[in-house]
Image 1 (cartoon, helix red, strand yellow):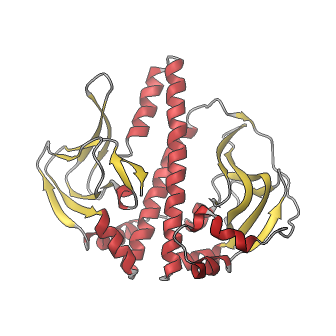
Image 2 (tube, rainbow, N blue to C red):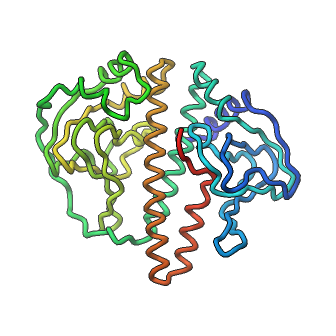
Image 3 (cartoon, one colour):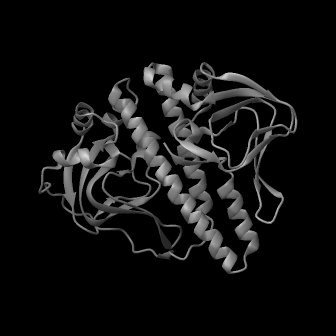
Length: 334
């Protein structure tokens, strides 16, 4: 988890490549719609994020103070500022440029790799918070829970799955040796449609890479069931629970007959937390996975906002709009 001690270490490493900045009360740190260049860490003072409203005026969507980081997504991909950020008081802090962050990560020293893992924890915390807000609101796709999915016997894959790995988007940036190193940790198997992959609240003893087929990720709030995502080829499944050393927060069932590569938690964590080039590639792949999950969550938020507006539930629409716009930076392309 993202403990105070790990937060302190993350900031210590980040400050090593940052430049100090200061802003007077009322000064603008970020402007909505401008390209993002990096991230800020607030050492002293507070800031407010505001979004422009279509009919004029602005809406305050977040307040951030000492120790807060804003614009962290800009460190790993190019994007635009989805909100303006204004100093509520005199502010002192640090600015980290995306290019400097990437250069430090490429050096593969321990501090740089901890920075990479720190970004993962920040993105994961953001995803958890957004999903928690989503669960507070009913959605049209909510349906009565089906009950426990059946366990099913595993079978051996009926094709050369190793030759198939290089075609998966997950392995973008990996060389053949790195693909082989990660694959050697895993065990490939097949499951039929409808089989249980894992259940919410179960121990995260392994995570999975979808090689062929698809799985449905879903939650069961009360007596209802809500689909979170469909994970197809190249998607990593169940990895956040492994990284955070906690039980699974959702369930997964096979939607189409699937071939999966299973990674035991211990081996996956050892590689992820190690100093190798494969570890760096794995961290990049996990960042891409988290950004896709955040994009899916934002799409669901946008749909709920539209549905609330059509029903005349304007208070709910404004509340969800605030949640959507409070993310400061929206990614576009790397």
